[in-house]
Length: 155
Image (cartoon, rainbow, N blue to C red; front, side):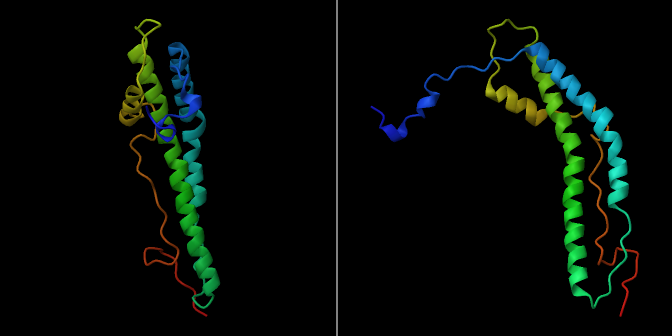
């Protein structure tokens, strides 16, 4: 007999399958991809333009401002990575849902998708419909680096 600590949780005792409507899954995939392509991706260029606006270099003697601008730049980079990554990730989710729908559309009502099928679809999904599929993440120059064209203002 299996000891109590080795048994699964009691709420898992009557665990059954998860049912999904393939037609609704395909509609979800199409609507999600359309939403990304029509209402999200077109605005990314405007966001990038706003985030790459030139910031004047601070006076080296004002160390607090230098540190603030460094933290601001790092936060800006993290934000831009998330904003640009969302479109691709959402497109991959839509592609995975569409792939599962296509794989199971001809099966009967008792066919079951295994967890490995879903994981494989999520791993192998390509955001083919996304306008950002081939775009690499962009970065702005660090405010206090030699790559920044603006001069550092001396006291």
